[in-house]
Image (cartoon, rainbow, N blue to C red; front, side, top):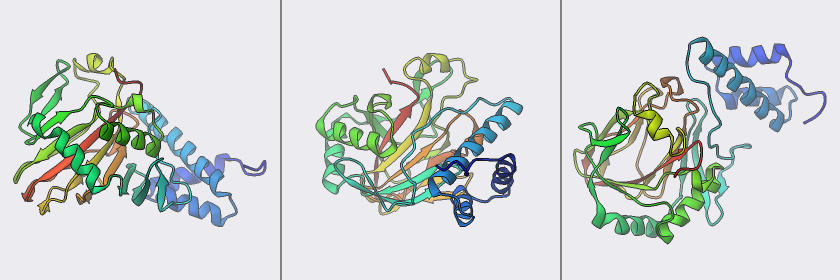
Length: 284
């Protein structure tokens, strides 16, 4: 960063106006570079200005303030990210909402190892009951599932270390890996992954590590048809491909994060996924 490159009130207003008109953060950074800004300075300026603006808007509307969230290292638009023991592909990145599609997060053999380890423990999937802090069967979620303890076996521990490096978030801030199995017709209707602050059971849930701030949905097999991950507010649909994963983050428990998402019905074959939720703090 050079001394001559600082964010003036005029630049701050320009960034906010452009973003409000629908210009994406990468496009803003490109425009700033064309005007002589160093890329790292432009990236930092855009992120800080937009984060501060969103927090101000949130306060004015009575919404919760934003918090730090996991974030992959996407400066310079890399084709790959070094995840320690694996080069993970960056197939697509979206700024608002923050959605990143990763390729080759897991090998086919690693996917099968997780499926095999989960197989005998599958049961009807439950959802968090925010009215009480417990769990319940939900008609919107028609899959079978199970949870591994964090680091329960080598395949799970290796994946957790890889994810931590990939999105720059501590392993201990992650919930246990959940594995889900969707048969033909099974789906998970659109929902948010954060815990609703208005529900009476939420304070109990938050004692274990604070709010959820990001999700990684990992595809463990290739369904014949259907089973995509949908984001209705964008709109976007991510096709399930073995070894790939879709990451999205949400800096506050509010619909303004545009992270409404769901699992579309499987129309032929079956779908296996693993879901990793990341919390603000250490999950206990």
